[in-house]
Image (tube, rainbow, N blue to C red; front, side):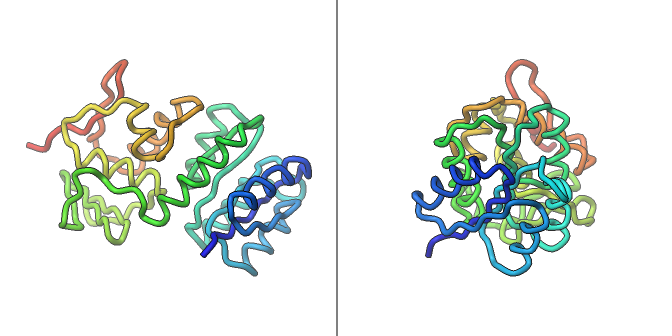
Length: 228
């Protein structure tokens, strides 16, 4: 069954490009011209993914994202001309799943949409997959079946990408992952943009966990030390 995607974008030219791309890729697509219309579509239809602009009339994409996140963990990919790191950090703190800056490559958008949907379907599997659904590290407990993380028995809200980053690092304790390797294994595609997106996700993950467990290996990437 084809996936249904909602595009919330006020620039009609970009909205048309995205719609044609997604329809040609086999998706059902609805479009909204502003944030209020987008929220209406969200409440009255069922979607598998939302493409969301930030700078829109009436209410902006951040406000739309906040309202959606109060009701649903549906994957959200922001597509915006706002390319500053602070803008991206704010978006990821609001639990978006990916962030694409304008002008964008059509092929890149297609690959990122496919990757986010594949993660939602459980398409990504770790190479060293364990039969046991529970992984633990220090006072962190990760439930792979329920996609939940607990620190000292307190549930921590993570995005799907943050969850998969944590699971990958916990499954390969002591192994140093380059940023490129993390992009390829977690995002599921060859990344064409700035590798800083990994830094932002790791920073948010550290903040949410509140546990000193992810080490930066200078000039290379990240690892989780082996538990004693």
